Amino acid sequence: MGKSGVVGLKDDNTVYCIGDNKVITKNLIFIWKYGTCGLGHSNGVMKITQISNMVNITQVSAGDYHTLLLAVDGQVYSFGQGGSGKLGHGNAFNQNTPKAISGFNDIISASAGYYHSIILRNDSTAWCKIFEFVIESYF
Image (cartoon, rainbow, N blue to C red; front, side, top):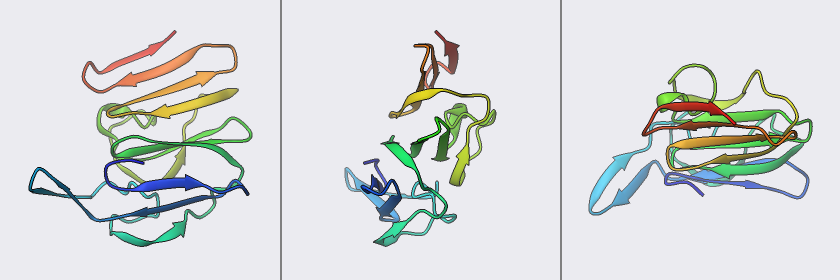
């Protein structure tokens, strides 16, 4: 569950989302504009909706404004707010539909956080993109 939407995984390995287009925090209204539901738009989604073409997904991780999906074949997909390159596409653009992250294989886990992403490979090496320090590391 992120700040602007909820993404869930069903038993049949399909992905669904729901989310409001406004987040109220401390009496301020923040407009949701990042496409954090992965449906190709940034409008509010008031009904649980399947994310098209996302099948064979084994893990879902929602950060505040971005989401990572891990597929059975080890491919990772990302979408949402792309600041500091945390989506893993080599840029800081927002992505409103799931996009495969290239250059990674044998992935066993993916985690989206507040402003970071961590991807763990089968050989125990990891890729980490941290917003505050703009650090990209492999360890």
